[in-house]
Length: 372
Ligand SMILES: *Cc1c(COP(=O)(O)O)cnc(C)c1O
Image 1: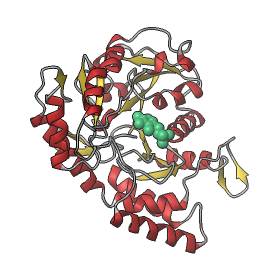
Image 2: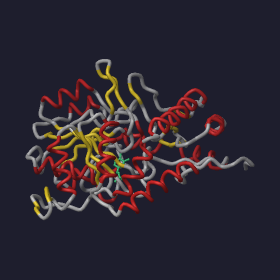
Image 3: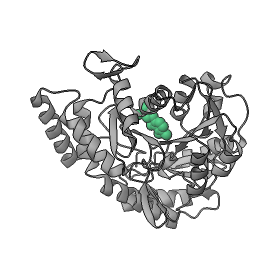
Image 4: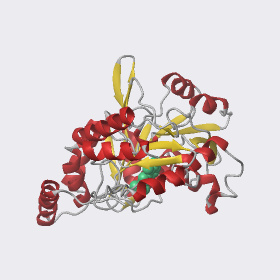
C-alpha cells in the first residue's frame, strides 16, 4: 500500500560505528584469556553503580535472576521469610512476579495508576497487611514508579522495596529538588540487559544495584555456587554469573546511554505534539520525572484495527502486554481474581516504534496514527 521504506518496530543490528566498537570489545576479551569474574565485569559494575547512584552493583546472568537472587539474599539475611506478602503491579511483565512465587512469598497484585502505568501507590498502601514485607516497584515502559511519601511510609513499616529497573536505566525522579536515578530509590534494584532493553547485551545479562554492600556480597556469593571464596560454599547457590564478554559489550553501550535516552525522548516529544486523533490516548509526559521511553504505549479502544492500519502502511508495532500475568496458564491458580484496570489496559495498549527512530519517520508514524 506504500512505496516508502517500512518502519520496523525495532531493529537490533548495530550501525557500522557501533559494530566496530563491539568487535573491539570482543577482541579485547578474546585475547585476554579471562572470560568470567574478571576486570571487564568489575569495571562494568563500577560504571553501572555510577549511573544508578549506588555504592555498588553486582553483575548477574539476566534481569529475572537479578530479582531471584535479591529475594533469596534477603531470605538468607533474615530480612524476608517464606509466606511474607509482596506487593507488585498487576499489569507488569510476568518476570516481575516469577521470583516472588519461586521464593515462596505471596504475591499481592495491585492495579496500576492510569498515569504512570506503574503500581498505584495509594492502592498499594491500602493493600498493606501485618504480613507485607516487600514491594516491587516496576518502572514500566521507562517511566519511574515512585511516591516518595508512601515509600517512606512503607519503609517505616519495615517493608523492603525492590525496583524492577529492567526498562528504565537512566530514568530519575526529582525528590526535594535533587534528581535521584531509578536504581537508587529502593533498597535494591534489578537491571536487565536483554538485547531489546535501552542498554542491551548481545545475549542475556543483568545486574543488581544497591547501597547495601552486605546484600551485594550475598547476591554475588549466591550467583557463584553460594561461595564467598573459592571452594567454600556458605549457601546452596546457583550459577548466575555475568560473562566478561557481555560486560565488555555493555561498557561500550553504556557510554551511549545519554544519546540513546535523548533520541527516545525526542521521538516521544514529537509523538506527543503530533499525534492528535480522538481515538488514541497518548502516554503522559510527566513533570519532575525523567522518563526514558523504553516503550511509547498509546491506548485505543480499536487497538487491533489501529495495528492493522499501521501495518498496512509499513509501520511495525508491538503489544506490551496482551495477556496479563494472572491470565497466563501458569498462574491461573496462583493468582485467582480479576484486575479490571489491568485487563482493560491489556486490551487497549499498542506500542509505537521508539528505538532509533528518525524525526521524519516519527512524523510518518504520527501522520499514519492521525489518519486512522
Ligand atoms: C525484561 C524484563 C525483565 C526480565 O529481564 P531478563 O533479563 O529478560 O530476565 C523483568 N522485568 C521487566 C519489567 C522486564 O522488562
